[in-house]
Image 1: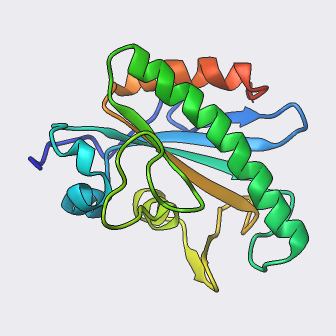
Image 2: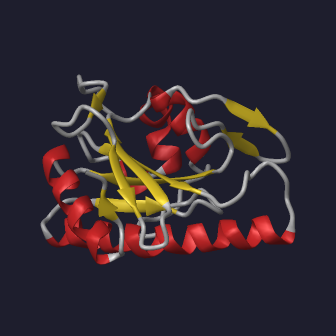
Length: 187
């Protein structure tokens, strides 16, 4: 893969992540980034169908959980499944809208680490490691790695979309689709 000089992060004119609130008061943060060095180096092993893409962007979607996600209880696993389903619905809509506009786009299944719309590679993608690399959030290593959000603590569920669309279009489509999923931008 050819290395492209990306800005380190693309964030909307507000110079902060896109902050959303769900219809049940759930907080969501979305930010758009150039891929981490790890993704660039291992692109063919993570996303083999993307080796011909000269550049792409990583969209980090963080959902606030009702509970800290440090332990594994039935209640926490149910919450993680609910957050995963919410992301999968949102992420598929965003990815298909960007694909309909002619841009290669995909989402990573947070549970498996493999892309949903592309052929899986030899190794899974690690959403937590990408968030740590791109946002600098600390990680607690437990049975699985858990992010520590600066405001939400360990009550955060990370997910990732990847797209070759320009960041301004990704932002536009993301906000448009977020509204359709009951996520309103905070004012």
